[in-house]
Length: 410
Length: 174
Image 1 (tube, helix red, strand yellow):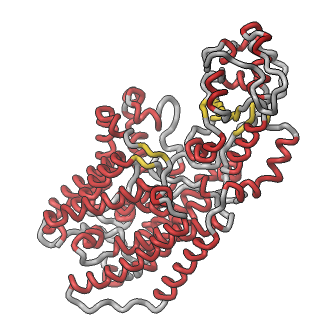
Image 2 (cartoon, each protein chain N blue to C red; image 1 turned 180 degrees about the vertical axis):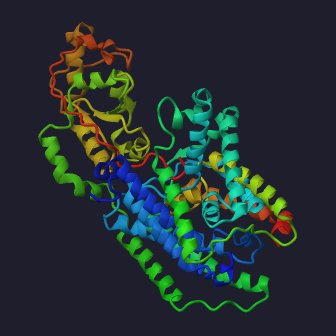
């Protein structure tokens, strides 16, 4: 699969990875300063249409970065699933944005630009940073009183292509073209407001804009990798693991982690609903096989100490689900060995009668029949650990998560 | 400092934007996360709070996440990104001979008024950035490039808020 983003902490260690971030920070600060963003007056000029530098720099950066990100994803170099996409909390985001907009016109900076203003001796930037710290302090003190609003309208990882039901390529090229049109308009507006002829543009600008459109067109033509493409990239390694039975964990190991407070285990029951209603493990989340891929996004948000275990009656559907999630780069994913049937055979004991046995069943059907929907109320749904036969082969190797669990503002 | 006259002009905005876009792309490509600024300041503040009044941290759920128990709020990549940003600004300012102690403002207001406004604006920015879970860099720029719906909504809200009130603050800047 795609080799990027890099597992920095694995490669360089905890502090070593921080050095990379410091270098990125330096490059960030240098570009902000040389763009003129250390100067509050220049930033504020945006809102009087005198110098639309903020808009131009920001949108150029967005379209360049966006095109390169989705190009490298289309080419299989970068795994978009492992990229931090800020989760959408719609209303807190909009209200916070409006407050920040007011703060921008009153204070003349945003947090990032105030840092480079501060670094170049701008006293107003220094005072602004103190204000930011005060604002953050006040937020920490008051958020408790509106916690419900702060957590409201959480749509998780939600992207524009999903919103518009369009492909990533279409959205990328549309944004590039829209931004370029707006740049042309911005130049005209500036010339009008300042009552000067339009500034001459450097000669490289038009070819660069054409090049960017061409790259966006490549993104559109190649398309983003499907779950099938992603599986092909990891198939060899993953099939071997399935073959060696390195990822099928025994029920005893499952219960060990279930009772381990340092580990969060999420059982994913991928069977048909009727089976799930008849009997499922306590805490099992019902995710029918055709919804597994959509669920992958959500699973990426779980903490690094989470283990996912797919479950079906035997192993066939669970293995299918495992492949889908593996292809979507969900970390720490395992299969319950022998599925529900082996589980019931091991833990149901006398709570299940011989009459409930189903003979002549097909692969991945339930080996027992329940007359009522016992769900997780059945005694075998959460057997106590002292029933355990502790002789099992441990298979779980907790992998450090590659996908970041917080963005630049965490 | 008298180098003002020799200060190099700022970059063409489209060139600066392209460079910023490449930096942003590389940040995502290498690390998986974008850029940010308010998170670093946030953690710096929580660090100070934790030194002054650790009990308080353990009582407020929002702060607890960053500095509860023995966890050090500065032990985060975002802090190093922020330190880097300040140094990057310094390096670029030195190279461009733009280092100067000054207060940028419109001609109609005093330095004192400007500082007051800067503090008030900063406070609004800090508060709003926490509410929106990100600032202009982390949400608008980074989230915008990876096509987050919330980040785009946020971006329009920031511009809307600033344009809506620009008229009333025209004296501060013009």
